Image 1 (tube, rainbow, N blue to C red):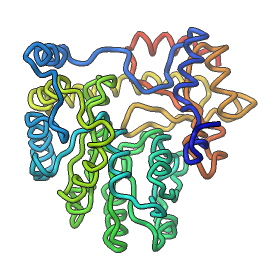
Image 2: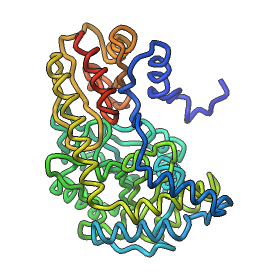
Image 3: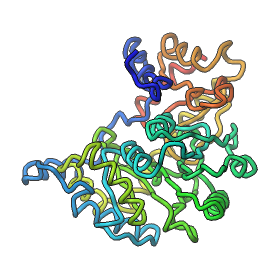
Image 4: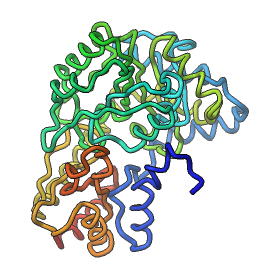
Length: 384
């Protein structure tokens, strides 16, 4: 085994394994969270125009001027948060690289990072590569409410950073303002940095609003907020992510980013700048409406099949309990769905590093698919 000790516990991601299994059995893939449809044609044309207009060399490491300016303008218009585009915005090769750059730039060996469990699987790996230590606070099915007693108990003298993902993958939870105010109070009391993954910021449903932690009193100067192109504009393969935050936090992430990828794809940055400038609130409202239809259609089929499926408040995942519908754990059920039913899903025990039993009777489906895809999957799920 030549893999370093800090990465050996992680192996191949469950997403890669389930996608491979889906391909082998020609299953409909409701596992990995990527759309099976294209984003707006105007953004594709903007990318083509950028390619043909000479935007094909290294970009400014922290992001091309049109993009960082568009990011700063959007944060100001949507959330009344003002950032200097040249010193308080950074662009990365996807939000995942932004998370990695932030942790490498901000954490020292032995520092502790507080995260909410279930947790997206890249977070613990990023913490490990930064030679820091994770501390987990449970969000329990089906309500996933923050347990503030557990949160406060997780803080030690070594805690440096708290990582919040809202809207949340894999639960579909949208942290309430009251929960975020409680988290902010903990950060202020213990002088913690907040790192927020907000890639699903425009995918909230039933009138719920996304509240950036940075917008709360006292948090603008200690919060690094991350988002990306992939989820909002349905271009997950572009891997264009960004962060906004105070100059010192951006500089720390940039110190690592310059030695990871140095710069992100130049023409795609220009196309993303176009998207942020030209597709605003009306586009977001249409996006939410379309995803609400997809969500409700999948929810109805899962409930009809006897699964307990709480309604997601955001993102594009359903976390369902299969209960007595199958005699086995989540991994066995996911394999059964893929190989026998013909629908691939993700076993979420992998999102529970400290207590995988919490996920053993759960299964995660993605509904970021064409209605035709969902209908075909629903027809197969009726076998349950």
